[in-house]
Amino acid sequence: MSIQVTECPQDTPTHLLITNVLYYHDNPNIITASYAATYSFTLTMKAELAVGNKIIAGPRTFGVTGTMTLNPNQVLVPGSDTVVREELQRDIVSLMYYWLLSCHP
Image (cartoon, rainbow, N blue to C red):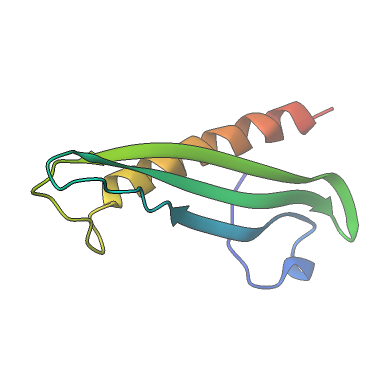
């Protein structure tokens, strides 16, 4: 069995279509600069499994969340959430994997 990434799902007999990928975080209320701030991160996506033009599973929405706490002397800058993002990606891939296993007859 092999996996191939393609831009056109019609090129494959069986395909997993992933759409609506969203990654975002909240902006916590900072009452005072002497307290740590906790950011909540969320990754969501929708997936469906199809054979030809027939959808055999889904669409299914997956979502995972994680947190990161910053000390008062730390600032959330672009790229500082890399560890959280990678953890959420691993978690959502695991969810999709188990979903795909459950789809097998």
